[in-house]
Amino acid sequence: EIYTLSLHDALPISRPLVILSSGLQQPGAAYAPYARRLASYGIIAVTRDDPGVLAQTSDVAAAIAAIVAWMPTGLPGRVDLTRVGLAGHSRGGMASLLAAEGALGGKLAGFFGLDPVDSGGMAAAGLGTIAMPSAFLGETTDSGANDCAPAAQNYDVLYGAAPSPSLELTGVGADHTMFEDPASCAFCTLCTQGSADGASVRAYATRYLMSFFARVLLGDPRIDATLNSAADVSAGIVQVHNK
Image (cartoon, rainbow, N blue to C red; front, side, top):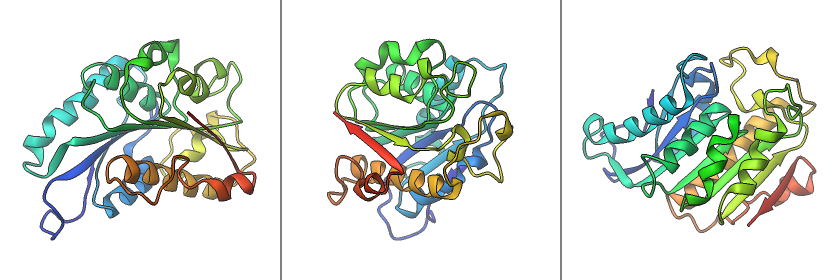
C-alpha cells in the first residue's frame, strides 16, 4: 500500500520515498502508523505484506529493489530517487539491508531497523559496505536463543557491524512485537511479552523513525544525531549509543 499526501496538493511534485518492510508473516497494515506519519511530512511511504514463511529473504530483498525501480512508472514524476530510505521490522529489516548491500547499493539515503533479525548473519556480513546513515531500534525481552530476536542475530549485532554514522536505540522492557499495531499484528502471542507499556513503545518508535528520515531525507537541522532522545534516556525507557 502507498501512503502519500494528495497527489494534487501544492507540495513539490518530487518527494522522498521510504519502503517499510514487514516482519515474517506480518501484514503491511501492522506498520500503517509509521507510514501515515511519514506521509504527513510529505514522504511517500510504501508498505507490503510479508510473502510468508516459504519465501526466501533474498527474494524479499529483490522485491524491495523492484518496488524502488517501479516508482517512476507507478508514480511518474512524484518520487525523488535521490532521496530513498528503507525501513524494516524483524525479517523485513534483514531484507532491507540485503537490498541496500545488493541491487540498491549506492542508491539509498538511510536505513532504520525496527528490531531487525539477521537470520544466518547474511546482512551483517556485508553491512560494512553500505555508505549511508543507519539506525537500529531494538528491545530487551526477546534475546534468548529460541526467542523472536535471538541475541546472536539481533539489532545489536547489526549495529556493531554497521559503519559510521549509526545509532542504536534500545527500548527497555519492550518486546519484539510492540513495534507493530496490535490490531493488525499476526501471531503476536508467539513472542515473549515485555514489561514496557506497548502504546508508549509504539509512540517513541514512530517518533524515532520519523525523526531519522526527517533528518536524512528532509535535512531537518532540529534533529540531533540521537534523534532528540535525551528525555527518554533520562526517563529510563530508552538506552542510546551512536558512532
